[in-house]
Length: 418
Image 1 (cartoon, rainbow, N blue to C red):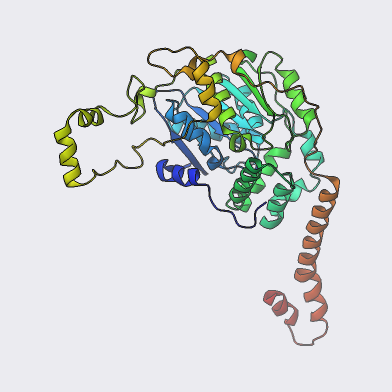
Image 2 (cartoon, rainbow, N blue to C red):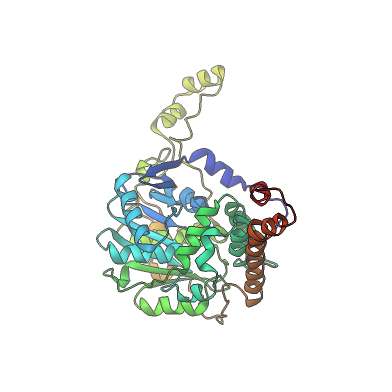
């Protein structure tokens, strides 16, 4: 990881274009981005433990430009899975969204499945990436889970970061790790504790009323924090689900391989019947040529162009009304050139699903445990030392020093001072 993190230029541009929403719903504070035509059923992105709503900024920028609505949320501070289901349903009611398509990674994928199980009428489809069906293995790897709510922030962050593979990475994977690490630093102690609690609280996904044909499983073939065995169990549960394997990408393919991830998300949404509305995106005309009718009139009117040159450049529209300008990926461009042309739509939208899927499952599968036993021992030792020192300073030391003096209430004064 880099010593000093600098925000990527496209992320800075994203922050200048897409507003961040913060709303209280009951006792929960929701932080989310909502961008794209409101007439389109939204794709809601749910991050893992180390993620925030910001980690999906590449999906928001790209898909919204193509006419899709994308909502990316922070997991709120909830302490059990039933509370999560109720809180998420209230959130959907407040933002006036009734039917959703969920894209979840790691813990977010598990929570998406739970919501689809208990609220089947609201979930139209699922995209699951590097996720799991059961939390028992994570609970066994975290014996100090009962005291996670009292654990200091620096230990929680260290525990989360040790789950991210360290060492030499390809540049795009290293950049994705650096970005997520910077996001972890912004998460409060209480939020981290609640997410870790959700990750180890005993629960498993039951049968879904959702058809396997409405589910896409998108996994990376190199490595991730979720053991391969758990990912295999997920694939066995949904045998008829679509597979979208990425050759590389690490734990955060939505950041390291955004072009491939965005392509698979588009293919999934088209397959489950979500029609994009590029005509509702500011700056894109119905014929897909780009530009507004006013701009076209200005091009045809040379006198107007001269007046514009004399008066200086016109004032640009505000960031909220201006759509983000996301560069097209090279892979998307190649696929577009091969797709059949059709009036009023991009060629990419008409790609055949079977031809466009990147299926690289032939490589050997390697099991990567969440956190090594050695790191578990180190973290447990540090936690035990911290609790021991607190016990000594608050109770043992004041009682001992109080016996050295004959002054009344000396022990109580010293305890209050400490």
